[in-house]
Amino acid sequence: MKLGVVIGVVWASRKVEALDACRMYIVQPVSSENNPVESPLVVADPKGLAASGDKIVYVTSTDAVEAFDSGFVPVNASVVELVDVVV
Amino acid sequence: MIFAKVIGTIVSTQKDSNLNGKKLLLCKEVDHSGKPLETYHVAVDAVQAGEGSFVLLSYGSSARMTDETKNAPIDAVVIAIIDDVQITHQFK
Image (cartoon, rainbow over all chains, first blue to last red; front, top):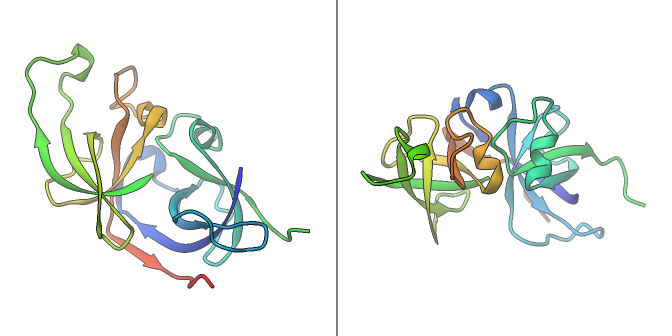
C-alpha cells in the first residue's frame, strides 16, 4: 500500500461494465513528508472514498482487484483508505 | 491503469484459439496530457475503441478480469474511452 494525493479526475463515459459506477482519479504518489515521488498514476475508487486534493492510501497490482466486492475488475490500482493524518 | 492512444489495429489469422474474435489494438502510451511516451502495447479491445481514441489501458493479470478477456493469454486490455482528464489540484 502506498500514500498518494488525488490531483485530478479522469472522465470516461464508455468503459467496461464492471467500472460503470466507479470514479477514476489521477494520483501523485507522495512520501511521508508529503514530497512527490514517482510519476502520477490512474487509480480507481471502488468505495467512493476520495475527492480532489485528498491524501489517500492505494494498492496496486492484483490487490487492486480485491478492493472491489466482485473481485473481477480490470484495474491496476485502487483507493483503499482516506488518510486523516500521518503521525 | 495507463493512458494510451490507439494508433492501429492488428490483424492475425494464425493465433491462440482463445484469442479468436478479439480485436487487437496497437496503442502508444501517453501521459495524462496526451503527450506520447516511448512504450507501445498490443491490447484487446473491450469497449469498441477506434483508431485515434484516447483510452485507458489495464495491464498484467488484471487485464484478464473482463468477460471479454477471461481465460485468454492476454496482458493488456482497453477498459475505457476517455472523454476528459482534469487536473484539479496543483501539487506543491
